[in-house]
Image (tube, rainbow, N blue to C red):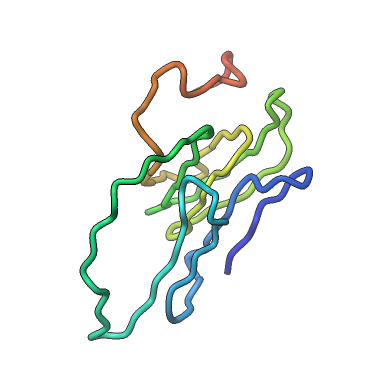
Length: 137
């Protein structure tokens, strides 16, 4: 199962639930996204031809993040650029989310382990603006 989080006509996130199972290769992101989220399921003995990725110059204007929830439960809150809470979603162990745009915050509803993948190089304070600097981080 997958879910697109669309707010005000804009794609804020794509959620790939742990229950998703389909044979073959499936990509859920538009080709212009700077992060590509895909799922692959192949039978034993299937081979993917050896390959190398070419050096291609890319311009990235928006950081997109992928979170893989390894254990626990996490609430993801989506915010406008003006810090207005718009919507929330719950994630559980095995779920994956690609955060495409907008503001976001998180609350661990249970002890939670997750893996985060995003573009680099990291630009420190230039990379993000805290929407609620007085709240917990």
